[in-house]
Length: 470
Image 1 (cartoon, rainbow, N blue to C red):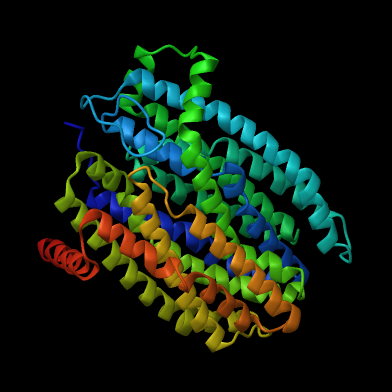
Image 2: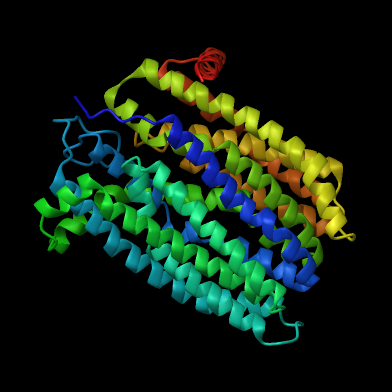
């Protein structure tokens, strides 16, 4: 039998705590950013954050793919498959296979990070030079160079976080998030108050990435099972074996990569597109609201991240009843947190933003449409994650096609109505609602033999029992 993995209540709580601190860094930095950055600096900072999302493009799907495969090995897999899950032959971790996958991560991520750095310093620099052409001062170039260094280091060491997710060290990842985000708030706040502009926010971002990934690395090597594996295996893995391993995970990694690109285009990419048509001040207002909504979404989907190793384990074990309970709990938590958080943003956070920055304004209708879009989008992404837990990614083409349609519709709307952000959101909704929003939910429930309403009822009952026992 495969080794059973579970997600403790403590791990779930730490997922929420980690997500809260990850997002609170943005909220807690808002007073410094709004008070100390000019309109141009504010817009440029959000452009930097948008480009940060490009890391998922350079990763090209390897992070979730490696996390899944580490979870399979941790559950007892003796070989890796390109598609689906191989039959298990024992409950113990295959040390040689684990070490081989680890070495493959190191080689691959070094190559990816170097390619990313070259592209950012060339193509990325041309883009930044274009949008800052009328800015005065040289600190913008310095800020961009530091940001490129952050991108390189964050991508190169990203595989440690993927491994920790695969071996169910969810709590450790979130502890790392808390420590690194507190550091970012402190460093950025001090530097912004010193008046060094957007460079202060960028230096805090650099420190956060370094601290998070080094903590993940240290946690990985402190794991008792990992120490046993490294004692029992040799470090000089043959290059041919590494390349064979990469070829094994490559098909689904490519699909994951295209999905990541599609998701980026369907969400954060809108800020970059809008920045080509409207002023950076308007981009700053839109991106600020988008940041708030993404914050709510991140908290809402945190439980999916906490339970993902367990979901993968239940699929390996073919434990249908337990799987349905977990999915139900995840969906009830997602719906409740997203709706509650959205109300909090509109009635509490946005008035505070307006107080801190009197020139800030945003349409209530546009906000409601954004909430609707991101609720449905993150829900479909959650079900895509459940589907991929069985090492199959049938939704890749549909996600890519929808994102292309979304980008085209956004360009058309901005061409004819350059200042109408409401039409931008309508374009995004139409692109996803025609297929992805509903189809992948139905696909998952049909594959597993569940129903949506029954699963929600089971999840709600499970939460009620948990609360009553507390």
